[in-house]
Amino acid sequence: MKAAVISKLGYAILGLLQQQPSSGYALRKIFASTAMTTYSDSPGAIYPALRRLEQQGLIHGSIEESSGLRRRRIFRMTPHGLAALKKWIKRPLVRDDVIRGLDEVMLRFAFSQQAVGMPGSVRLLKSLLIELTSYLPELRGQLTAHQEAMPISGRLALESGVRSYECLLEWTKYALASYVRQEKMWQERKRKGATKS
Amino acid sequence: MKAAVISKLGYAILGLLQQQPSSGYALRKIFASTAMTTYSDSPGAIYPALRRLEQQGLIHGSIEESSGLRRRRIFRMTPHGLAALKKWIKRPLVRDDVIRGLDEVMLRFAFSQQAVGMPGSVRLLKSLLIELTSYLPELRGQLTAHQEAMPISGRLALESGVRSYECLLEWTKYALASYVRQEKMWQERKRKGATKS
DNA sequence: CGCCCCATGTAAGACGTTACATGATTGA
DNA sequence: TCAATCATGTAACGTCTTACATGGGGCG
Image 1 (cartoon, rainbow over the protein chains, first blue to last red):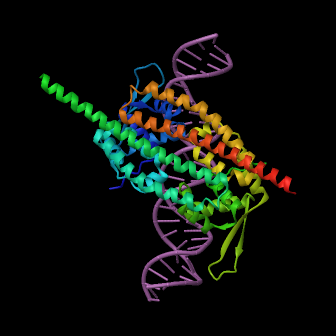
Image 2: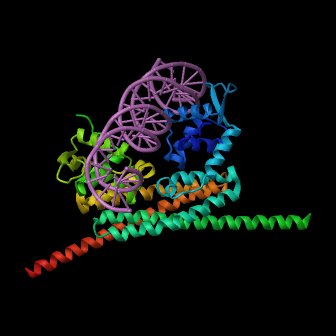
Image 3: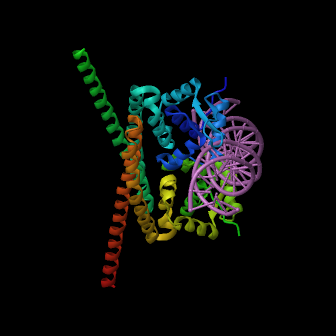
């Protein structure tokens, strides 16, 4: 069995289709207009990506004739697609994900709640926390080690990297805290509901 | 005349060669071991990139026989290469650079001081400041607008984006301030030197 | 009628990834 | 002598970019 290889754009599409079935054009608009602008909205990227996903049996497009407009293909996620999405989100975080693929990690997190539930989101955050706390000192070390040999702009650029990771670490803690809060509220509601009934 | 198209990796190489002539292998080690790990250290990326740059006349490699090891090609930047690097760094910042190509902007800044001097670095920072201050409110607007419709993890992911831009804005101000400080010191030294002589 | 938006697609080309190939030198 | 490191390269493959093509529908 071939390990289904799916591009980042592919996962972004899968995640969006999980939220609701959409046409290629609707996806393009999402990529073009929302904060997901990091992903390509060009037809030359999206339509081939959709075809690949369909050939892998992860999504399925059906022609919708109802509206008077040109035929539109609405894509839906298949059970296989959902499984692939879950697997991707649950994949253990490694150092390399944090260094070279942070945007992909954030994408996984963004879709995590719907796909694997709150415990899954929390797991992802916790391993992100671990990776960040192990990587940051190393990066700071590079800064102090090389700062003599670098022009000011080089040092500042490196500092910007350190800062952005520090910022992300803060966010991770904040996100975890808000999940804890959420869970407490949920428990509370459950308790109240139990006493009432 | 063809507009020399240079990839991000190409510019990264140009910038490093500006600092000092290096072999392909040395460049690979830099990409593999320093904070520049975002750029590929695979030979399949670097050697073709070097060849392209050489064909465009931006760098020139000369075989160094001296050491007993296998022949090594040391690449040096040509005047054309320096011109291309400067042009790239001076290129006006647009919204899109900030949204889709922040890492490239940081790369430009990192090399700016050596290539175009402190005034060039400051110019880059100032336009980054402008773009960020115009983009951030828009991004925050998206957050408030869509937050009802998103799962918590989606909202948090978007918040992480907002925060990282806020963090970058802070850094930009900090970097600008340290250039101002630097300039003051420089003026100071000049004044003292003048009184002494 | 011309123009813009909806909506889908294809083709050429550039670039990076992965994997393989080569070969010399150093050290266990 | 076997493995690791230095050092350069090539080939197949996948994906994105850019640009073009097509065609219906609404609007001034």
